Amino acid sequence: MSGFFGCVSRNECVNDVFYGTDYHSHLGTKRAGMAFAKDGVFTRSIHSLEDGYFRNKFESELPKFGDATMGVGIISDKEAQPITVTTPIGRYAVVTVARIDNIEELTKELLAEGHHFAELSGSTINATELVAILIGQGKSIKDGIELVHKKIKGSCSILVLTDHAIYAARDKFGRTPITIGKSDKGYVCASESSSFDNLGYEFVRDLGPGEVVRITADGIHQVTAPGKRKQICSFLWVYYGYPSAWYEGINVEDCRYRCGAAMAKYDTDIHPDFAAGIPDSGVGHAIGYSNEMGIPYKRPFVKYTPTWPRSFMPQNQKMRDLVAMMKLLPNSKFTKDQKIVFMDDSIVRGTQLKDNVVKLLDAGVKEIHMRIACPPLIFPCRFLNFSTSRSTYDLYARRVIRDIEGTDNIPDEVFEQYANPDSDKYKEMVSIMCRHLQLTTLKFQRLDDLVAAIGLKKEDLCTHCWDNSSYDE
Image 1 (cartoon, rainbow, N blue to C red):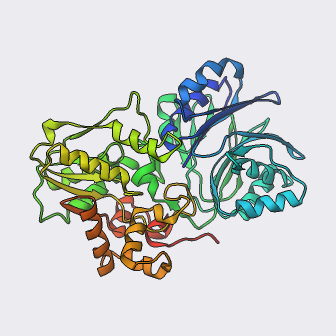
Image 2: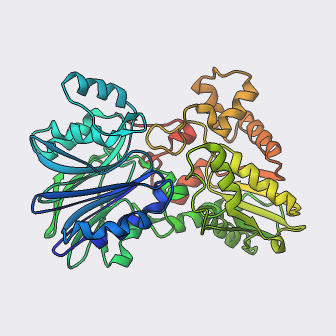
Image 3: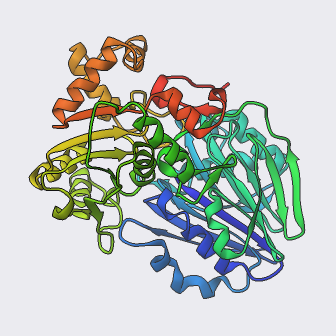
């Protein structure tokens, strides 16, 4: 997904940006960077995270940023950021949390106008550089940001560091969040509110969909009013968000408790010894389940993180699968002859869950009841990078549906039948998954229960990956 942090202060803000950005490390896996401005001078640094942690990469470089009073940082899931450019409307640095579906179309358009691209992400155009160039086509920063929101298809939340302020611009439909905090020193803006507390900032408010504000040490000035239509990503509560984070006034961990409790209400026909969560994001769901069911919560899996920090850090899938296997350790005290109900956030490709089940069977678990905190992922995400890949059939649910239908050419109308939890096709799909994964039982969260657990109106949530609904006009 990616996550960013910005600060404008009356005092030096380098340490706040450093630690505030580090608090977003769970949101990105590939690149990280920071940029600072003081007296019209911009300083930038970018590093890969594929072989280390954000903190280790940047700590030794902090002195070079001096006593800068404005800065931005980013943990990026894809391209190198921040991008620093000089344009007719001034010099500025840009960080984005974005997925631009029409990036090829916009690239051709800009090249035809005589623009060039200096940064690459692998062999592809750097999406943040494209956004920086589009902003420079406006008559002002405000005008440029509005041009970005008008032209791109997908989603894009932006921080723009200038020589006098930070401009924070939330995605046109609010799919990714931006939250504002303050202290007696100044203001911060970030993807997650959990980055505020330990740095001494208190929550002020969330930006609305499409809203743009200019932030200085003295206050927040609204540049563009928020739009009326909101489509915030539901996965923020299910998977992405850190447990202590709040989105739209709703705490992540509290929402996960409600998700688990909702699933427990359907389990009147099983008698597990205890509930467990697949770490990390399955834990909150499992605690909610155990509290509602009135059974203990235990940890038959423990996560070993000192040398295996992320299952998705290596570049190739074979190594990612190896790391995923290595980092979860079964505890035989809580596995042999046990009947366990597990909660996990989702099933994406299915490989990691299958490996975990094999481990549990080898460890002597008698019954494995798997409960997934969201519906089956059937439709690849058009707005973030969670359930996307080179092939739509990388999604486990799609592969099962393809096998049932016997063809790759399946229209959306048929996929939508499989997304209906009351349909025979859905029941067949889940039954096949259960057998393939060697589970005793398998159930997915119903979408209406997930929406209720989050607590927002259905029309304010993006649920595209589950039911093919979307709003991008």
